[in-house]
Length: 208
Ligand code: PRP
Ligand code: URA
Image (cartoon, rainbow, N blue to C red; front, side, top):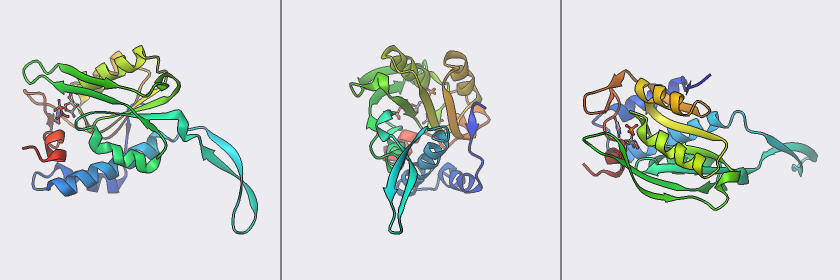
């Protein structure tokens, strides 16, 4: 099943708060982090666990643990960094790479300005973060760069997606699983998601 859409009522409730234009920066930022944590839990449903022996206060037992060193998070600057804390809460030992991209307002094409990955990125499962999947250009370019670096397994997490972005990602990167809290109606004439939540970067950082 791809994309995987979170249908949990609590997530839908939180989404209604961040969609509201009256919601301020503090609450907006907190909820982006909370939803990101939920997306991370969902994205980890196929994670392989290792059996370890531990001792509880009552006695010895076998338990299952995640090898956190197998993962890397890659937020797309700027807005993707708003999701980062939510993921670090779930997997604190994952490494972090950054991709700097902004959308040219005229062409809507992503323009690259930064790329820095952990040295062993090719050996890690990578979870790419961006709250908005609109035309899909930024996500697709990021995934292409990661594949050029040898990354084999990539997942993409976003808060809100447009059908256009999903279609593009599925066409250009059919191997990448998409996790989202909502698939909205469409893009408007200037490439914004409808109804969406506006400009995620500006709302997270309070820049407008
Ligand atoms: C936004 C968003 C995505 C991109 C999505 O970033 O955070 O990165 O647009 O659009 P796309 O799917 O059409 O590529 P923006 O360019 O506004 O940069 P910012 O995060 O620095 O605000
Ligand atoms: N980027 C955003 O921040 N919001 C949109 O609706 C589309 C792209």
